[in-house]
Amino acid sequence: MLHWRVPQRIRGAVRQRQGYLVNAQVAPTSYVLKVGDQLAVTFLPTDFKTAVSAYAPNFAQAVTILYEDDDVVVVDKPAGMKMHPHSPTEDDTLLNFIAANFAKRQLMSHGQPARPFMVHRLDRATSGVVLVAKNPVVVPLLVSFLADKTMTRTYCARVSGHLSGSGTIDAPIGVNPTNAYLRQISPAGQQAITHWRAVSQCGATTLVELQLETGRTHQLRVHLAHLGHGIVGDEWYNPQASAPRLLLHAQALTFPKPFAQQLMMVEAPIPGELQ
Image (cartoon, rainbow, N blue to C red; front, side, top):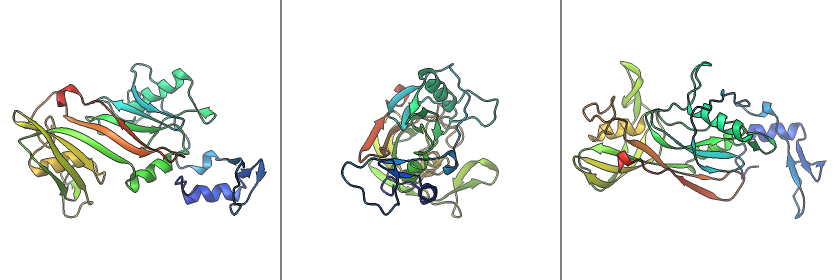
């Protein structure tokens, strides 16, 4: 359970209600497993902060699945699509479409109906790889992978001007005092670190590869604008470089497969407008 990153709170709840069974018999946590033993762990909805996922299924749009196993699904989010609804009447978001996909396939996860649980976010204007949990058990595991950086995210963006080489942007980000939705570089803000590498130049723009070391709101958009090379199509942080969409794409996601000693890497094809 420690190796799988199951939080201490949940491990304790299982122990207190004698939820560890070895060969169908209640076993203390001090029991040492032997070859051939069968361990069963019983979880309850109350063990999890997010026990219920109730996104209304919307069958209007299919989602492109990049990877799937019993615990997670990785999809390619289109630019312009919101991650999740902000009110009960909204149902045109990525998680609504994933819920519809699960319902249509009558998908199961460890004997229970699969339901989408959000692990991380992309801005509405950003396209690319999104990891979604299928059950509440793996949510805290995946969140811990994000927190300790064993889950890594690689982006690509087309930015204004010519860049060459590589570098790191280490500049704290805080809330814009005149618009709470926007962010800005601020000495009083949260630490934010972005690694970048120039890939190729095209006209007056450069394609860059980006690695997030932290995950602040609008981090890549604010950092690149701070560098003097804002993302093309960013109406807030680089309004002079217009485009039909924000040219920012979550290209790859690397994460440990839950309950397995296996590191997965899933990639989403780079949209043509970024190439």
